[in-house]
Length: 97
Image 1: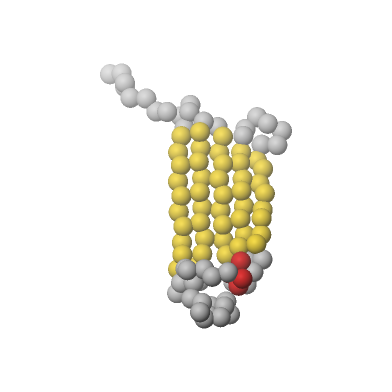
Image 2: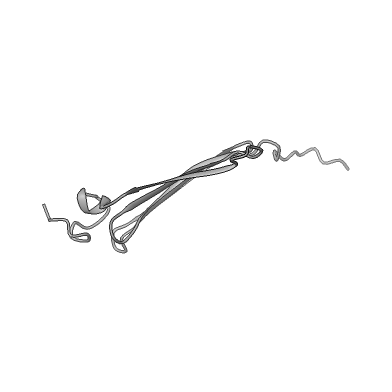
């Protein structure tokens, strides 16, 4: 008996995203990733307890000398210097409005 089903392993394609915004715990993060064939790219963001937002953007292309590359960006005092609706205003010493 011959199997007529085919798996698409030669050109995989996917995309996913998730985020967490929990005002009770102060957890703020997100992650997004896509793949088309052999190229994968995405980013993740996370807020640390001091209020700095860190974002890492990355991509991977096999067969290139560079292959995997990532860049990190930081936004110091991200949660301290702007109103953020997902956190209580007093969590990072932000004056109540």
